[in-house]
Length: 246
Ligand SMILES: [Zn+2]
Image 1 (spheres, rainbow, N blue to C red):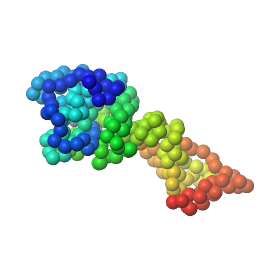
Image 2 (image 1 turned 135 degrees about the vertical axis):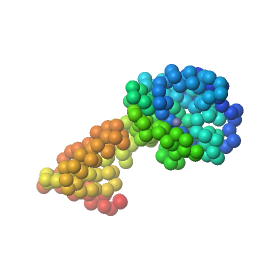
Image 3 (image 1 turned 180 degrees about the vertical axis):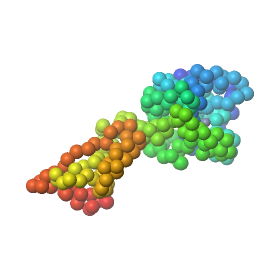
Image 4 (image 1 turned 90 degrees about the vertical axis):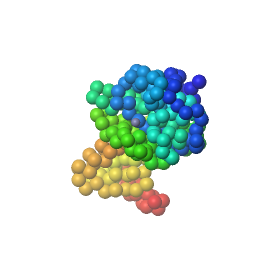
């Protein structure tokens, strides 16, 4: 019986019944290979396991019940018994961490968060990377390798699902969707509005850097538009309103 309705039960003999402590975080891994190989590895007794595995087309397999302790994150005081571990296809040349895998993992992470009462996922708190977990025996997992796990996108999409019900920025999530690059009042300059503050952009490279960073963090393009004119200075109105609330 899967804990997540979008998962298929595969099972593994490699786990400890029950948990020594409550679930406190999601541990993100990359398979350094493919879902089929992970199914086979975790199916052999005496090896490792994880709670879930996500494949390149978005297939989610569950190997160990969330009520039990998978063998993925070491046996430190904050290791296996505190984590729900998720493996992802990728991590070697030829095995790509695909958009479908990222999207499926985000849906899974959001479902886990809801069930454990987490309103938001935060790296370093309720999301950790394998290489950050004692005894630090897997320094390449999940992102210091070829075709690394796009874990920032997974967290961003999961947080949008938690905030709006949708993985993207097209509805509801005001703080994120208002970020924009604005040309104010027909002036020959651009500013970056991060949703709360205005930042002057003094060089075209800064515009490019903001666009690239936004795209990497959210998977979508930042809005770029003119606001106001010399006779109707709506950008000035926005900026002064921002000053009052920030
Ligand atoms: Zn790992």
